[in-house]
Length: 194
Image (cartoon, rainbow, N blue to C red; front, side, top):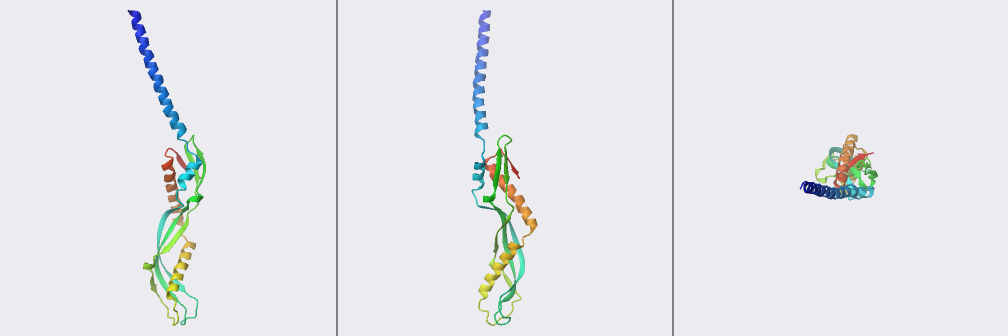
């Protein structure tokens, strides 16, 4: 009888060991799938980033007053006035210039370089243009064209004279947004900007 108990205990131990081995194989299978199939390549990250063309990071509303002087002779045909305006300046980055330098699947890091922010567009709201200091001209028949030229010149002027603090803010926001875009597709990875 004593021998029967030993055999029974050994059989129970054997069943427990077999169950542990089976659980170990199943756990190993799932662990290996998670380790090897969760690898990210630089191409995948580029594909995630390039779903859009441009990324506007900040929108700046600018108010100002600007003079305009047309070509021509004073009093006869020279358009001349000052106008106040409200303009919307969009600052951001071109996503086609974002570079994925490398992906480290061991440390779970993605190394990315992004371009500096630039003005993407300037739009002057025509409803907000208020004219002042209009100078009289007898034969200035192209007043509408004067306003169109005023808007184009003003857009060029706003593009040439950006505020540096807005660029720093836009660069910072671009990093936050790029990090969010990348981690949405590769959630276990850390994004490092170089």
